[in-house]
Image (cartoon, rainbow, N blue to C red):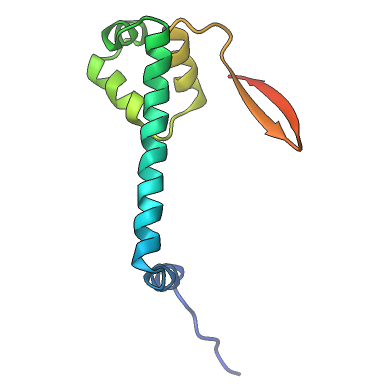
Length: 109
């Protein structure tokens, strides 16, 4: 009875990553950084459209101004956190719009 060779998933992933040309890695990193910047800018733009400062949002959310600044830079958050932030900016009935098979589907958050 022969034993199959076990390959650790992390080792295989490291090997695959090492095979990616450095120029592609740099391009991917640059694109990811740009997406993060646009996302953060978008939250700040929503706040500014509501004519609110980070300090005002912080008071509404019972957090510090620094926490609001960090929140605006995050690339991932709970929907409940996003809803609270949007409501604090003055948004009414915040929703997410997605397109599936050419149809727009609106989700309340």
